Image (cartoon, rainbow, N blue to C red; front, side, top):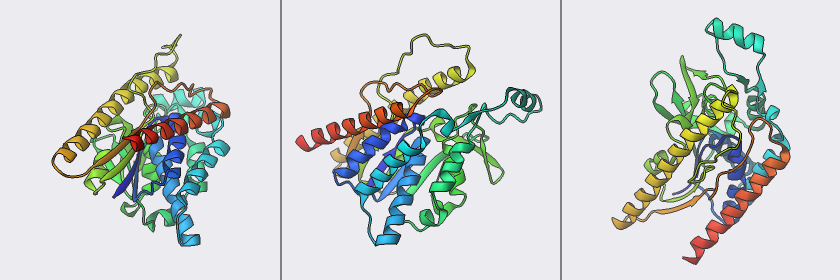
Length: 300
């Protein structure tokens, strides 16, 4: 089975969008799409669009599916306020004192985008497998769910909820946050579900970006930086494990094809002040990297 695996990376997921377009243009037609964090959002949009096409036309044009995702980002994600807004300092202080802390940022704009552009019915009836991952705050365990498990879009929201910056999402009396706390690249569930040909798209390079003039006294900046450091390390570990697993499988005579697309150098994006031009730049970078990696694969 062919699997498209989409890792986390917040707004750097724009790079992922460009890489997805290159992969789908090259003729890759996934049987399953699994994602975490921004990868969960992109996965959900892709499967929703694919099933919409199947329902309307009886078939899926994967190139068009990727193009629709690209259009969505360019049209709807142009500055930070399209994703979240800063909470009132007064209410933030009051809620913190009253043990009602609900994150520094309000992700309502993002949640509205999900509601507007995704239909539960399409996801539940899709022939394309989809799973997203979120972390249970109490148990610390990673949980992967499909639309048939119930509350799927709640888990999508939870998977993209950055700890401390955004509120945990309550689902069946438990609270969940960004799956990137435990795994940035959801390749393990895809393998468990039978994936044998995998295209893995990450948003983090092997090396960590080193910002100049970092203001460690800015709370949002500090949280983002700590998350960057942690997520980069987890992503590297996930990819190293995946490459090692594929190599061992092939040596044992179990064919396993793995293509990894990720930036070779750290992506630069100010999450508090990005513009539509920044998003477009990352999409182009992702597309170029995808084309480059796929050409090398063909030449081997």
